[in-house]
Amino acid sequence: MDFHCQNISKFFFWFDISKHDAKTTNDIYVCGLYIPPITSNYFDPKIFEELKKDILNFSSKGSIFLLGDFNLWTGKYSDSVCHDGHNITTNDLSDSSFRPRRRNSYDNEFNSHGKRLLDICKSADLKILNGRVSGDALGRPTFHGRNGLIVTDYATCNQDIFSYVSHFVVKQPCSLSDHSPIVE
Image (tube, rainbow, N blue to C red; front, side, top):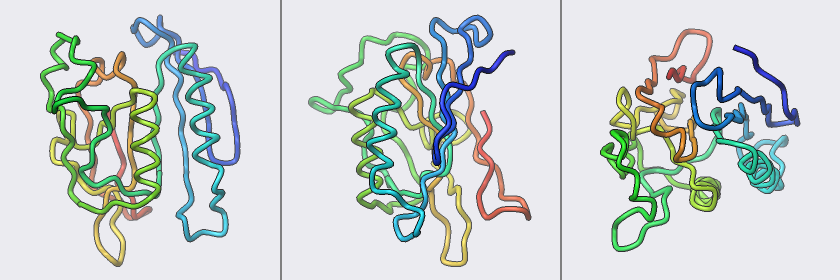
């Protein structure tokens, strides 16, 4: 499988996977990202605008997949545009359309940056995989710190590749990190 670097910035690493290698209908543009905590000296308030701009650019070329340490909290709040309790994109009749529409999450924590991610998901039709896909139906915590457990690492993708994700697991943390590995 060939990967081609598309864009590297201070917080984002974009690469593509061809639709032939991925066996999907579109090329996939993957972003590995790290968003510093809001209290960090390294946090840049323009980071979400940069992310939105990149998503807009790459979504015009193919499918989007984001994963990494977002350092934000979305709780159990919706990442979908809803109308009368139903997603607008309900014309999907694939097996994946019968997955739970609502996300589960170990925690209920929510902050302003979590709201920004949810707004990006809604505007770009991205779905958060945590707490929604087989293997992590409960939305397990991804960070294990002195002050407790919380979900701060996420994987998101747009609707057209959501159906290709059959399994998603948040593993136990290893001794080298206070974050849990995420495996698809």
